[in-house]
Amino acid sequence: MLLLEGGVPAPAAHILSNHYNKTRQTYYLKLDKASRSGGDIIPFFSCTLAGLVEGLRTQLDDIRHFQHQVIWRDYVREVLSAEGVRQSAQVRTRRLELVIALTEQESVPVAKLQLLTPAIARVYAQKTPKTLARDLNALKELGLIEAGATGVRARVEIIQAFLPRKRISNIDSKP
Image (cartoon, rainbow, N blue to C red; front, side, top):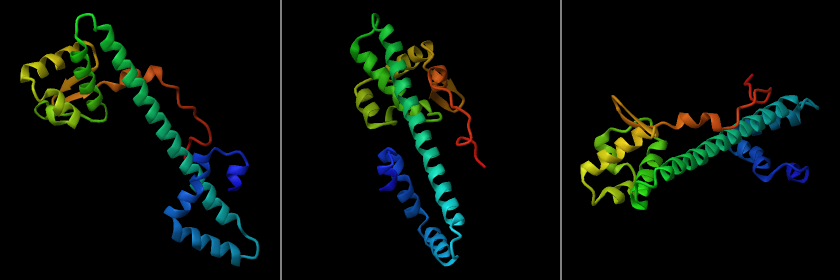
């Protein structure tokens, strides 16, 4: 409540209560020690501050991951739309679904692509293996995916230039 009243945004203000819930036993030990120490509350606050910093790092990582997903999805849409003159909306949608499904995967064997997600299974249910092969070849030509020894993967690293650079500071460096 003090953090909220002090102007800390709600998601960040809840970090401490989440930290205390996750480390309940340590929290109670540090709190008990602080109350019995005759005023030495530094170990308790150090533990609290470490939890806050770790929670903030986690939130920043989550935000960066979300930015990455949004920028990647927009980039894929843009690339596929530029090819739109030659392709129907149905083909673009199918290829978009395929690239997006591959986004969170390391590498997927081609034989397992059609069952990667329920959306992909629906999209390719009435299609032949040739359709999948054509889609994969088109996506490779566009540079959105690549095939390797273990399967196919999305080339999400190509959008790194569009993302904000991670600032190196004291809060970003771990002690």
